[in-house]
Image 1 (cartoon, rainbow, N blue to C red):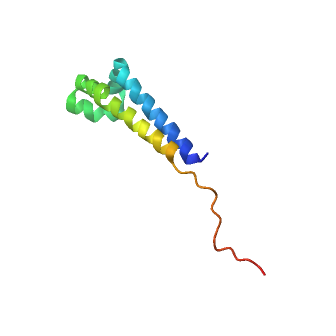
Image 2: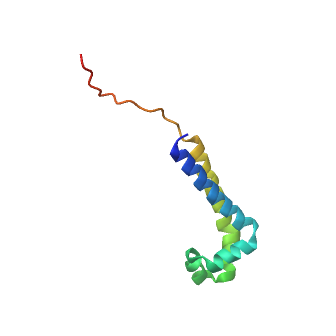
Image 3: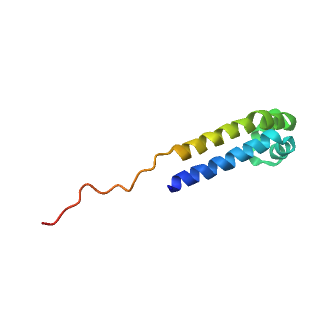
Length: 92
């Protein structure tokens, strides 16, 4: 297995799991909207209640889809065999 495949798979799994947690658990979305420094801009623009709704209904499903896309790219990444150097100088 290629290390890039493993990293993409793990990253996709983490993103998809956090997205599904935010989608299916409204309390997790509320805690994230209140405590996360990344949600600060959304809290200032929309307020806490609307930010919780946006995390629960918009960003959670987007995270799930993005995580699944990353997993698919990680799994479908072509595995290349070790390529040998073509410019090998052979002694006669």
